[in-house]
Length: 499
Image (tube, rainbow, N blue to C red; front, side):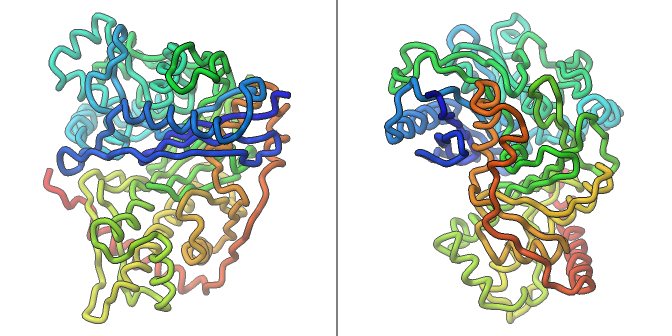
């Protein structure tokens, strides 16, 4: 019986494949990292073929480990690092340039020009986004403007654009398609009309012939084509679900009702609140995106983005050498009762919501002669929590909903000290699920809903189970004082890089 769904979870630093049964349990999984490229300060790239090869390798390995046959698999769902931009040749399928990663800040001058041209309000009104190098539109423009011959080829209809979902689906099926959640992160998509916007494409110099067809998140994206090395057994299996990683995690956390919210602690931090079937525009520098389109209905989400979260723990490990594992950061942080007044603003690639400052840079403030590595580890963890607290305060204002509990997932959500401090500064409970692979689970839910494994949203919501809740233990006045100190530290980090 076709009760199994495969989720491809293509992330910023690795590609994974996870197979779920109809109860949401993990049957098997595989994961492969790939290389990060930093050609200049503030620039971040991936080799698109590394993305394909590691993802296909993970898919084949997870399927082999599962012991299942193709007949057992109802569908495949895809979730992906968003905004990362790939342009390739329609005929050869070869990329014309490396993938420009969502973290990359190279298009800050283009954003400056859009703001000077008075485009801020039009961009917000049409796309629900704020002008920032984060999004795909200016990355496409950069490739067309800087790769010899690319613009001419694009205007002749010979080049295709895709975010990572589109790139994977193209290589798996030959179809050039995307979903509304990923499309809504390009700065080219009208989130009310659910279609590509001609005016935004013209403003950014993006030929509309490059853009993929938009298919509902729980829909039909294509079937696995014949002759993919290592995936021959999966030929003919349909891809029935796709969503950007943060929207997928919102569904994987069971946040199907307006006012329900989740935060994913990954390379970055991404806080989303379901705001129902209408798309409010933020007055506080937050983003409005399509959460998903399924069963003929569209759900929207208000979102705040922290560019560097788990990456700041990696910085302690890889660049400073203060820790050898992420868990060691927790162990050291627990050795001191507080940071001793130290704040770490991890604006390595600028600040996201609500500041949207691509010229901000990391700042370590409040350091004294008594500051040790335990204080620094704790400051890094607390800095992640402060940024999330900033987002949720504004999110409640924009969405018009009061959040009762924050549901959490992602790699750093396993940190008890971070989760407790998050509850303290938020003054709200934190709910950590038994299955922290909620991003992949959300992609599986979308595919399974389209393929008939699950019948409705209520059924998939019921599969979410709590592993632990963290309740606030800090005096509210102390929490407010700490937040005020954090905001002073952020001011030191803002507008640092010379324009």
